[in-house]
Length: 166
Length: 288
Image 1: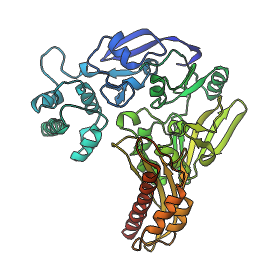
Image 2: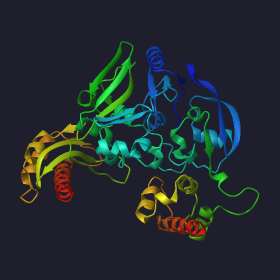
Image 3: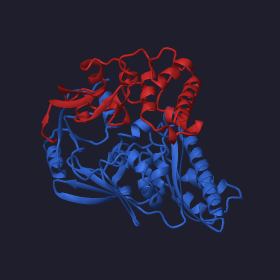
Image 4: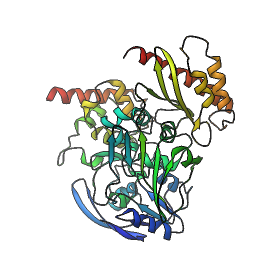
C-alpha cells in the first residue's frame, strides 16, 4: 500500500514468528531496534549496526537479511522470523542446527550465534553440498571466538543428519 | 548508529516518486538500502525525505532478450544472480555479482542501486562501463538514457539530477565467444575491492583478438584501460608480460592512495589482474 505523503511516523503491520502485530513506529526506526525494543525479542543481537558483522541477521519473507540495514517500515506487510522461532515451542529441545552447534562447541560467547543460525535456516542445504560453499555462505557472519572450524563442523553434522533422515 | 530523523514516503508510480524528490529539500531514493542505510546510520549522508520505490509496479522486472538484459530499479542482486537466462546473455552479471557483498546483502541490495550509488570500488558500475550499459532515468522533464561512462562521474557522484530516479539499466549482450572475467583483490571475501578488474576478452586461436578492460578501486570512477587493451591485442599468453603490465600501469597513472594500499600497489595489482584475466580467457577458449 502506498504512502503518498512524506511522514515521520507510520503504522506498520508485521508478522513476526507467526504473530501478527500492528505498531506505530518512527520512519527512522531500524528493523533491528523494532525487533529488540518494540517487540522485545532480544535474541537478535546488534554488533556493528552497519551491515558488517551479520549478528543481526533475521529472515524476512524467507530471505536472510541484515536487520540493521533495513527500516521497520520496509518490513510493512512482511513475515519475519527470528532465532526465537527455531526451537520447537513448548519443550526444552533445540532445533537440529542449534543442537549441532551445542554438540560441536560452535559457539563460545554466543553473541554471533543467532545470526549464523538465521543465515543457515534461510537456505536449502541441497545448494551447499561442498564445504567450500558452506564457508562462503558463512562468510557474511563474523565470529570472534570459534575460528569458524567448529561452526563448519556443526553445519556438516546438522545437514548430514537431515539428509539421512529423509 | 541510528539514522537521524527523516520523513518517508512510498509512492506507487515513478512520476509520484519524481514529484516527492522534487518537493524534498534533500530527497533520496530507497531501493535495497544496503549502502544508503549504513551511510544514514553513520550520518554520512543528509536525508530529509526517503522515497521508497518498492511499491512502484514493474520496477522489479528483469527482462532477458537476445540483445541484452534489462534490470529494473527494484530488482535485487540475488534475483539477478540466480537468473540463468540473464547469465547466458550477459555472463558478467553473474561473475560480478558473486563478488558483491554477502548473501544477506544481495537479498536486499539492487543492481541499479549499486550503480546509482557509484562506489569507486564496486563491481557493478565497472561492469556497466565495460559492457556499455545504458541507464534509464525519469525526472521532472521526462526520461533520458545515459551511457554508463557518462553516468559515473566520480566517487559517489553520478549524472543523476536531484529529482531524477533510475528506472532500469540495460546491459547489452556480450559478443559471441567472449570471456568475461571479474577479478579483484580484497581484504576479505565480500568486501569492496582494494583493486579490481572487469575484462571482456575475445580469444581466437589461442590469441587475444580484442579486449575490453575496466578497472575499479583505482580511480574515482570505473577506469577504462585503453593502453592495456591495445597491449593485449594479439597477445598469446606465453611471452613476457612486461608490455601488458606497463600499459596497465600507464592507464592507472593517477591511481589513488588510501589506508589500504598505495597507488603503486594498485597499479601493480591491476597489471597482474589483466594478465590473469587474459590467461584465463585464453585457457577457456582453448577447451570449448
